[in-house]
Image (cartoon, rainbow, N blue to C red; front, side):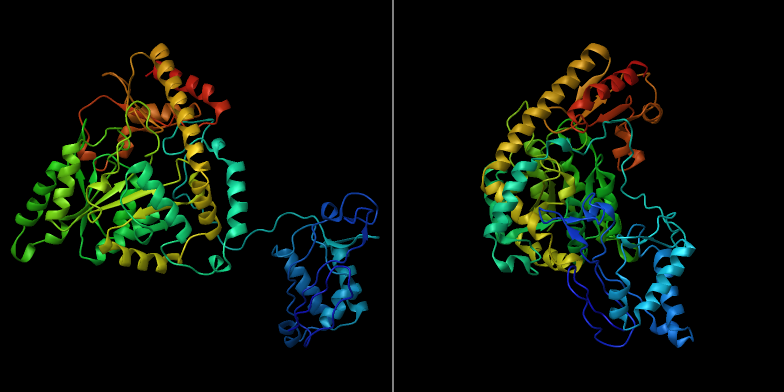
Length: 538
């Protein structure tokens, strides 16, 4: 098999070995006065006239020749198959007959005959002065069954009020671009090598300073791990907990189903904790541990199913919006110390506080027993896949080891850019702008509901990017309200969707969870109209 290259504007090189595989690039036909490539007819640049072919063209003739096919028939079949299976897309320009012949070590006339035959069959198209291209045809049908992947997909509609996303139009494109340029200009060469599973040191240093200043987190770069979203971080933690013998994790009665799925996938059992206006009932943790240990003894003992960790959203419970009271924070830390357990603190929207002083991170109470998790998904964009864990000393090695098994380290350029964004002060300025924007959004939501749906009680709005709408007794069931909303193009969720165990469902009127940050600015008024119309008929 031969691999030779024909560089645009130069004569093709001779084949390196026997005929078999060709790698060719299109020749430059002409140039305009500015030096840019033009089509032969003097029209648009060549890149607009056809799809330039600059990649590898693999034509394996050896197998066909071995099967008894002649050289022309082998080349004809190979090109026809490449077009049929989509490797050569419609509009792709093929090498000239001379270039391909020299690359394959065959006569030019043979290539001319093959091009002519495939053009007659409709596979190729040839025009004087424009070379030979793949003809426009129906897209090839993929082999085998089409597999539809729906896991993790969000429902869509004209009006998106699902909680969990920021206004993506606020992403600081100019600041990110400026930070990327600066980061790339000063980054050492070794930054682009395989790095530490903890992540780039530049970002870990920047985050250690930022988290100490803004959230009161007590950590250092050697105990910070950068991960591709908090869910990945939770999966790594779950693997490390399983390794140390943990069999179950206590979770808040209401929370994100994907997080619970991640814990279950790691083989961990879930123990729901009741909630009230002061947050999770962490005062019940000691009783849960004693009950699961003491109630089962002898051969049937399942002491390994006692909670070895508890997952909390203490600053702003998701989705109810309650802040974890100080005595319950202390109770969770005492439980972790007494039972050699860990508290996992999900600080998913820690920057966005409106009507109260920001609550410091719970991690500061005991950095050896509390894992702090933060993310840029709400402050920047979820598509960046940037999150971090501040780990106790005892979890750094196992979590980093599992991270190395997963993907070694995260995207380096994004980490360097985020570090520069923080160090330059641009990130602080962006967060302040977002905080004002989301507070105004929240105020518009509250005002619209007060005027047009006064029977609805709005809660959980002192912080964060969503609100809980509690409907009066006698309202339609949550499932019916969500279905009616979807039918009208409005996407939101019920409070019950976040419930860890249906048996824990309270005997209370229905409630909806609304993400007031999600729609872009121009779409927010229409989304509010659709919401108020739904609630008017509730």
